[in-house]
Length: 108
Length: 295
Image (cartoon, rainbow over all chains, first blue to last red; front, top):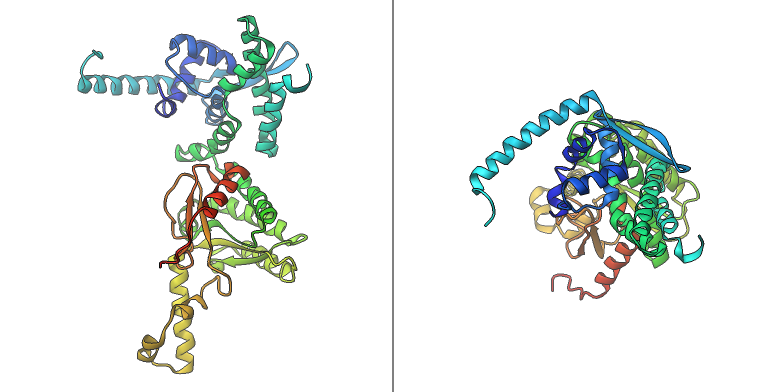
């Protein structure tokens, strides 16, 4: 999936991955890659500004951890983030169902 | 590990230099953690250390992409009503100095920077505007006042600006008045091209009203030079080249009158991410064109 199309959905993907438990950036990318079976192409570094923005918005919280002598920032979903995820997920499914109904079924 | 094999270190240095702002600490630490871990996964999968570092960097994304994502974080957040856009403004203001340095290096002696439009003043929220004005005062006006190498001019409706900002801009004009380098920078603040032309007309009409010229006489004799004399940029040459950043292909009310015969160059990069290489590309494109001045 191309990067432009992914852009608007990155927040939802990040929240969704973090619903499985706290993780650091690289862990989130790995989970995203595995769960999407490599569908999404993105510059991995761009998830950090997105994570910072979600934290500014109160949807995530983060704290420093130690990883083999390096500092590591670990992100977790807040209550507000969990609520936003639930709302966005519902909205997404409604949107996807509409798209599917119009486009018609699976690709040939 | 040393020398040219330490690609991650080089990447982080480039990222740090490109950001050049106090807020970078966290993203650099996170970038390093990410790249080291990705490189370790690469070597575990059988790549050499250098290959693994290269792959980690490629996956992470080009420095300019990261910088852009970082800088626009607040811009996007603003549209969603989440955060303030201070970051981009401040960096954008610092960036004026970089671009002036590039102009100095290439021997360009007249530059106009579109700092903020008349429409910006009308449409941005109070808090953002207050911040933008503070940035203009602190960064642009201050920097240009200290050891001036550019003579500063202002284009725009100063009376629409807060007093402190107008004062700071006037101080920069005063402080650089005797600048001997022959280089001129015009800051377009609260500027609008149409408004400028109207103001020029108004001023021309008043001038003639005082002299007792009738409207019919003026209508008969008026020339383009009469208008030019009354513009904010009176006495300065028209621009040879107008560079528009941010991927927009419009002039947005910038130097309407003056750009009649200017060459236009459009660049995808946003202003804060506009690099010296983009600047040089614009100059190269300009150099390859044949100027026709409407002929």
